[in-house]
Image 1 (cartoon, helix red, strand yellow):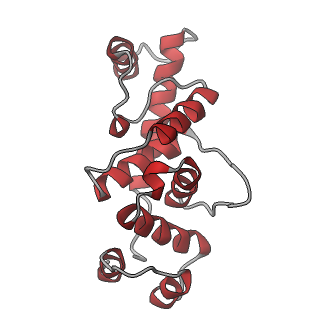
Image 2 (tube, helix red, strand yellow):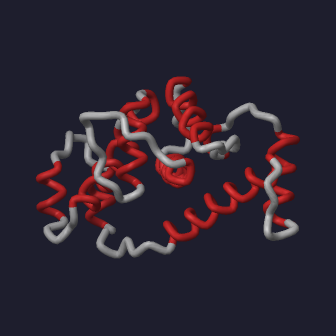
Length: 171
């Protein structure tokens, strides 16, 4: 973990080869993860440019991003990455471009709740209904709009829990 902290606090630009030297047994997914952490901590690009944000989200979810196309992100991946990004830089602001990208990706999957780290000014009453349904049921959830949103919210929470349990001891 000390190696990662040293990389995160470095003022110079860091090349992937330098990360490979620090973590010789790291996979390509792990290299991209560390590069994404460094980008989040040392650059405004992941906060301002939706292309960079998308690649950062994918890398923070241990996927190798493809820079030759727009790939999209799953809502749960966005929730995980924004939570991690906010923990690294609490005061950074997401641009309107990134916020619009998040809305588009979430809505493409039929999910109309957004990560709390993004501070969307949405319908709090609707969000409360969804959260209440997700926490209290009855289960199995039905097919109403609120129930479908609650099911997706629970899927996001399960994903977040699973990502928290991943082994990052290699850092």
